Length: 230
Ligand SMILES: *Cc1c(COP(=O)(O)O)cnc(C)c1O
Image 1: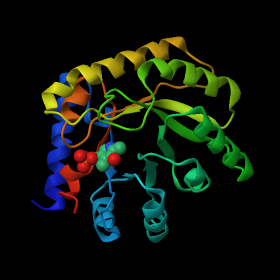
Image 2: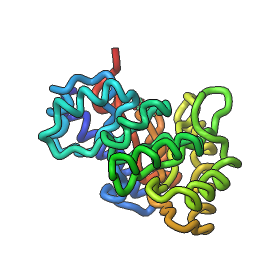
Image 3: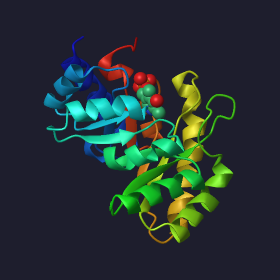
Image 4: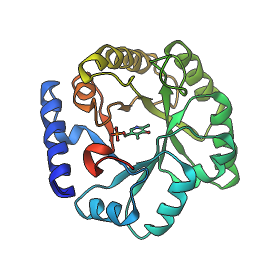
């Protein structure tokens, strides 16, 4: 299968899964994950209609974003962000999906202030599988973190949650996604000032259909679009 066919197949699956939860293809935001994918391939995907791309390393993203700066692309940071890279991240990305500490949020705030960036949209990364993922904040830590960012920071704007399910067969990911969806709804009801529970970013190549069925409205898909990574 070529890139065009793989993209079409992913969109079809997204549409079907969305229908199962009473939604449409357009209700789901697709982030095409381009770590290790060469810029030529990214350009090809862009020409096939994909406009949002996700990278997990600042160094790699910097170089690619520079190469592709003439295209109207929205770049998302989806990997763990070290505090010393915050200075690049605020300028490179339209959204940082992997905020998991108050200290990192403060660093983003400080850099936004220095570079006169009005708003840094972020998602809070929730850790739902203690054994398997190193990063993110456990569910019980999420409401206090969001409350503190909302109270104390002006430019870091929370737009939702992100999570990575454990790497198990797709069907077994369901309860994890359900748990994060409940947290998302609870946070929405809490209505912290300046906080918008708009994006629920969960689901990767292995499990995006289950994630959408359970309420994800943003999926991050690499392999199913670009093929296996080297
Ligand atoms: C690599 C990556 C993805 C995409 O993974 P695939 O299995 O290739 O779809 C999604 N989210 C994050 C945070 C990643 O690092």
